[in-house]
Amino acid sequence: MSEKSNMACEPHRIGSTAMQEMAKMDIPPMPPFYQVWFSYLEKKNYDLALEIENRINSQKQVDEYFLKDMHEKYFEISQSTKRVEHFAGDMLQETNTLKELAVTFGSSAKEFREDLSGLSQKADASIDRDSEVEEVFSSLVGAAQKAIEQNSKLEENLARAIAQISSLQQSIGKVVSDANTDPLTKLHNRRYFDTVAPKLLAAMRTEKKPLCFIVADIDHFRKFNDKWGHQIGDQVLKLVGHVLRENVKSQDLFARYGGNEFVLALPNKTLSDAAAFADNIRVSIGKRKLVNKTTNDNLGRMTMSFGVVESQNSESPDELIRAADAAMSKAKEQGRDCVVS
Image 1: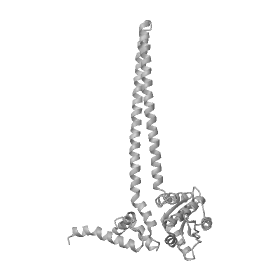
Image 2: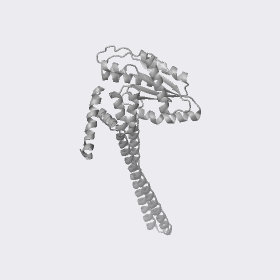
Image 3: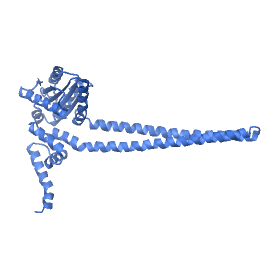
Image 4: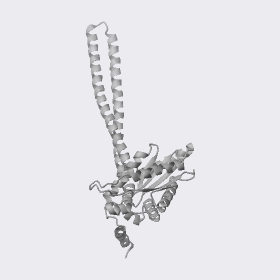
């Protein structure tokens, strides 16, 4: 078989392997999941492949929640970028309109000043002749009326351009917000956390203040999901998001990091403070009643395991997350529903 034939067969082979592996993992063959797994097997997207390899090596579940996050991170961001670029192009057009209006306004003002200057000179020359004075004043009124009409039109155009730019600014803000928000839990997503965490860590080091990272994971989430179904699983994730929003302060950074895993960065908190904070979240989660909204059946109690670490001035955000993740794994080994720091 020629090299060209081999190249033609390669996508088919990768696609077939992707479908087989997804079936073994009990992952629905939906297009977004297939796209992620095909890309992983193709090994052309290094960051995506590395992220999936790390998850597999850490023996964490690769499920549809995780693949959905990967699809959002690596494939859907381009759509948000295109929308921002579209709005930015519209805003540039409106900005150019404002520039044109400014030039037009300057021309109108210059023309009015020239008319006034000419009429003033004419009035001086004919001050003793009533008929000519009347003509001058008539011309002056006409010039003023013309200037008023031009300025009125300019003001309308200016108001329209300003309103359009304001609307575009709001649209861009919404697109950016949507791109940084997990649609299910309404928490920040991993993309946002990975962008902001390095800045927060740098700021805390400059100010010589403590910073702690927490990784939290829902216990037995896969078994829970298999027993009650994905709709109930989504309900559980929403509940965790609600509890976090209730307890986390505005200065804290928190996000759904992937699947049933959540991550928090707490500035100005020592290790003991952060561990106590995590335990409060754990207790609050344990008190929540899980009820099937359709049948009103009691679904039991949900628990979470937490790992907490404090920055020692030498780690990167990724290293801190890995350390907190390792502490969370110890919490799982110690029976779950606990905090390890």
